[in-house]
Image (tube, rainbow, N blue to C red):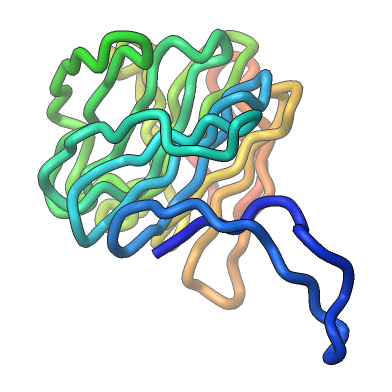
Amino acid sequence: MSLSTTPTAGPDRAGSQTYETIPVGEGPHSVAASSDGRRVYVSNFLDGTVTAVDTPANTVATAFPVAVGPYGVAVDPPGERLYVAEQSSTVVKVFDTATGGETIVTDMGARPYGLAIAVHPEQLLIANPIDDQVMISDLLTKSHGALTGIDFPVGLAASADGTASTPATTSPTRCPCTTRPSSSKWTGPRRPNRWT
């Protein structure tokens, strides 16, 4: 598989553009970028890796071995830690982006899917569709609670300023847009949310 980057030529006869491609692993799924845009991380579900792409050079910088079904990825604001959800387990792995060193974190709910970083304060948001919740933890992966009552959240996106997040669900009638918790409550989904 490959990741398409910048156009290498103008529109062809059919009106589409040709893009430069960068080879990544098998079954690319999720993408996260460092805040400075110099690295893009692609989870490769089928071969159990996350590819780090050096965007100025448009080349693969390295690959992080994850082992079991890497799904969601997120990068902390300084770009020092890479978070990877293993959808086939209860594990979120944390990698040092400079050394490749890894810390395995467990107890992140059954089958963590999507990840996002909120920045004020820094928190890791973990979509957990099996439990219909988004888990909240600090970036050192100590759990602080969960936002419950979200139908099967599979993905997350946080705003650039870290003040809002949006869980993506598979429910056609419930795709909540929520604000991050200011202290202990969020707003959004039709069902009342509660911290657990």
